[in-house]
Amino acid sequence: MLVITRKKLESLMIGDDIEISVVDIGNGKVRIGIDAPSSMKIIRKEILEEVKESNKSSNVDSDIDIEDLMSSLLKDKK
Image 1 (tube, helix red, strand yellow):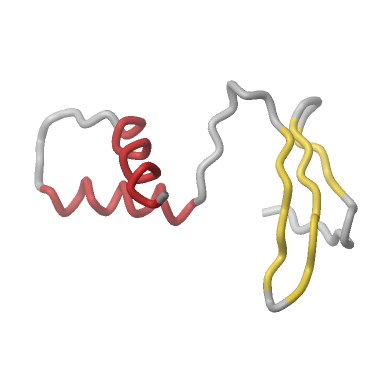
Image 2 (cartoon, helix red, strand yellow):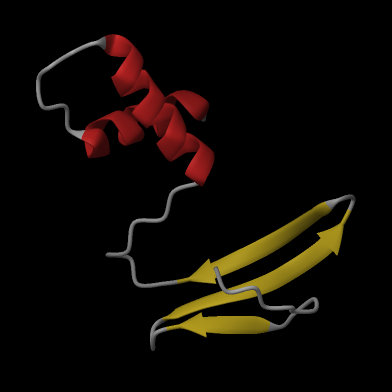
């Protein structure tokens, strides 16, 4: 894991087309902005882990489309 220190309004680049910016720092939280191509799927890690755990606990042996499950969970969270 690469650890980089950034101040508010500073950013870093991943490749040529993904920019991660520190938008705000405060109240024990860091708000980040992500500028990436619309074709890039971005999902919070805890949502992805929730989908994986749901798959494990369902005991279903069929091939489940994780993209469909993530979309469903994201709609439910709104």
